[in-house]
Image (cartoon, rainbow, N blue to C red):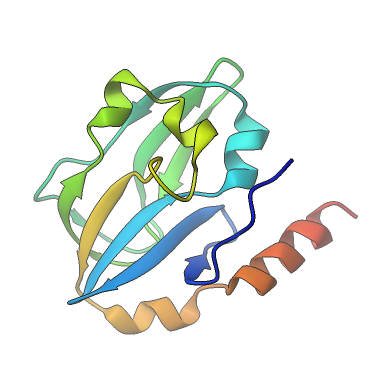
Length: 132
């Protein structure tokens, strides 16, 4: 049973999501689909607060019993905050990928990059295309 995708999110084809918070801040996580593919998450490696991330570069790792997967920065910016609760409870991502399972918050250096990302409908279409 997959979670309904919130309408305010933007996506990368590699299953990262972005929620633009205003003030040039953006919260980033991985999609419900991604956590389903990975299975039960056992470890999360997050970027450090103060790190500068480039859009498209790997910046975090989520690890399940089955596989480890890189997380790519959907937009460029500086890490303001990380969800340190995931260190002890990585399964929060499995339970609430679009809510409490967020990974980190960026101060975007190029907010226009969000326009290049997929809407929820486009992301769902990309998933459907992958299944054929």
